[in-house]
Structures are given as structure tokens and as C-alpha cells.
Image 1 (cartoon, rainbow, N blue to C red):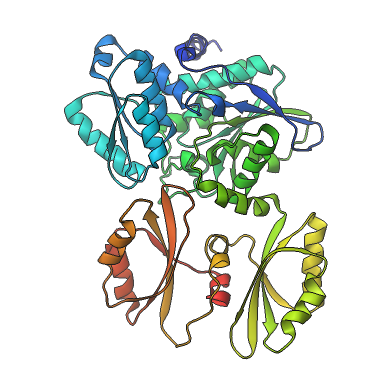
Image 2 (cartoon, one colour):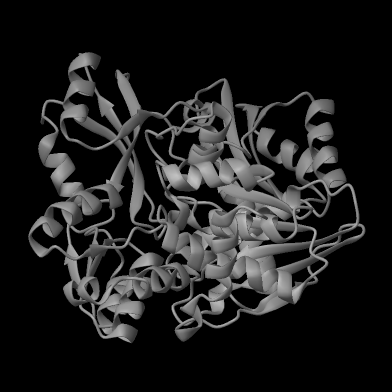
Length: 499
């Protein structure tokens, strides 16, 4: 605490002008989870005017600029919450702002930024392409670039959340913080640890976007080849060098959570507050669900935002049962003979709540059924599996198979009636008009499409399952590679049984 830099940081946070645009967000006790000797509180940053904490860092940074810098205006690249934070800050200070957003950005977010008075430039299919264009554009515009996380001023603004937590709950023991690029956790952890080192700071990332965890483990910044598309607010391939160093110094632990666990946490928060947070806003609650508290605790989950597309709610509802552990998915093999399906129902299903059931003739010897079982408790789930074992059924538990959850459960149709050489792939598509036609037009017509399934998740990027009939596999994959779209082979036990 005697370090001049640390004292200056505490002073800057304490005197931050963020409350020109932000409010002290409420700390609401959460009563929907029973854990011994544990109280849980939600830090409601989703209730800020732009439905996110991002306006704090953006405003603090912009407010610190000189008059000459402000005269030039500000520019940034963002597909979401940071864009609205910069736009609102610029409007408050009556300066020009330009926001570069990917073409895949949902119209609701584009309109929100435009309503705040910013000029919107649409470019590219993802944040990286938009950011590169922003850099090129600014060579002519010479505006002040506002980085979404890797900036001292932005981090200081986000740290005001940590200050509020200590004021609202002096006896706080654990703070769970979502991690994207690291701006939020850098500010919150640094301030809290300097004031009260005993408070445990736990960072949370999606298990398919864990850039910070991997970097901390490697003791160097790791850039991910790809990131998950569900929790788009924290989908960052590379954390900042500044945020990496601060996180390494002040954060006690980093956890990861799955898409299903995030969906369940969204449901929990809704049932407690009647508010719907975005996937990144539920990360902290999802981590609390699986954290092993070994002492009496007062834990805070930062609900970082609520900018969610309406179309995504159906997907969240479907995955919530899996995330809560109340649904299991199975592939079960039956003998293909008259009465075998009825026999299975009588021996196994009777007494269980079945919320999905699919059947397809495979051949004259065997058949496979796809079944979703809803269970009230872990004991019910164990009993169902025990029944399958006792009756001698061959089965696979597909509850953790992401291909099954996103595609196969909606498309059971059986294998082709003719024998073909076929490969099935998952290909990432930007969610914009014309993307599918663009892909198909780049694939050689000599490769016949044998399977196709797409289902929107309400995000900026979607995944298509597509099968090709081929003679030369190398030539096929070279063709797919030349389209510029990311792809991977879809390898799954569920594929083998049902497609």
C-alpha cells in the first residue's frame, strides 16, 4: 500500500467521474441456491442504462483525454457492450464517435449505438476483421482509439465496481468475475486486493473461450485459434498484456464453465430477479454453482450485462435442463424385431419423465433410439442407468456430446439407402445474409452434399453440420479450406448411430 503507483490507482478509482453516466448498481441477495453457510449476492451491472458495466471504463478513459484529443473524437471496434459504452460517453461529452462493427452484428445492437449518436461502420464477419479495419480507418481519421480492455484508464473505470462491493458488503469473502479480455477482473481484483487482501477473487471463463486461464497456466499470453460463440461478450482469442499481468498478480483462481451450466445460471437469475442476463452475465453465477466453499462465505457474482438477442432464449431454455443436471441424453441399441420397442418402454421407461424420444430403423439386426430423460434427482438418473445395465441394453450417455445437443437431436433420419463415401463436418458461418450462398458457390460442384443441418443460436456466428460425398478426401478438404470458412470434422458416437 506504500507503493506510489498503487496509491495513485486507489485515488483514481475513488475520484473516478464514472457516476456522470453510471449508477451505483444494486447488490441483491440471491435466494435460489442452497449451500451450507453461504450467502450469495448479485452485483447488478445489467441494470446500467446500457445494460452493461462497459460504460464505466469507456467514460473514465474518454473523460481523461485532453481537450485537443477530445476535439478529434473517439473511435473503437466492438460488436456489443463496449460500443454502447463509448457511444453513450461520447454523447455525454458532446464529441464525435465512430464505432466499427462486424456485418454480423444483430440489428438491435446497431440501432442502439446509432440512437446514441455514433456513426456506425459495418465491416467484416467478426471482431478481428472489424478491429483491423478500424485501425486502417483511423490512419486517416486520427481519432482517439478506446480499447475495450487493455488500457489503464478503462481498467480504472471498471475498478469502481470493486469499490462499490466493499462499501456495500464489507464482510465479502469471495468475488466471482467474468473474464473476456480481462479489463473487468483487472480493475476489480486490483482495487479489492489493495484494500482487503483476504477477499478471494475468482475469475470465470467459458470452457471454450479460456484465453486467460491458458495464459496464466503457461505464464505467457496464449492466443486461441478459435473461441466459443455462445457467450459472445467474453469471446476473446487474446487477452491484453496489461490485463494479463494484473490478473496474474491479484486473482486467486480461474474457473471455466460449460454452455449448459451458463444456461442453467441464466434460469436461476431469472427465477430470483425476473431479469434475463446475457450468457457472459451469468458466468459468475455458474461458477458459484460448482465452487466448493470450505468456509462460511459471503459471495458476490458480478452480473456483467443483459444485452441478449431474443432469438437466443429458445436455445437457452432447451439447454437449461442439461445444465442443471435434470436431463440426460442417451443412445440405446435395440434388437430390430417386432415388439422390441414396446418391450423397452415397459422395462425401462415406465415411471420416468421422458421429454424427447426418437427412433429410426437402422438395419434388420439393430435399431437405435434417442431418448431424453428428465430426472428429479441424481438418484433418479442413477436408477435409470442401472435399469439399462440390468436389462442388458447397450447404450451411450450423450449428455456431454455437443454435436448431439446442437444438431443430432433435431435431425434423426438414418443412413443413406445407398452405400457412399461420406465425410461430415461442422463449418462456422457468419450470421449474415448471403453467407450460405457464398460458401456453396465456392465449393466445387463435383462434391455432392449428402447431409445439411443448421439451427440458429441467436449469435453472431452459427455452425452448420454438412456432409459431402467424395472420391478424393484431400481434394474435398482443400476445397473447403479454400472457402475461408473454419471447419472441423464432426466425430461423434451419435453421428455413427443416427446419421
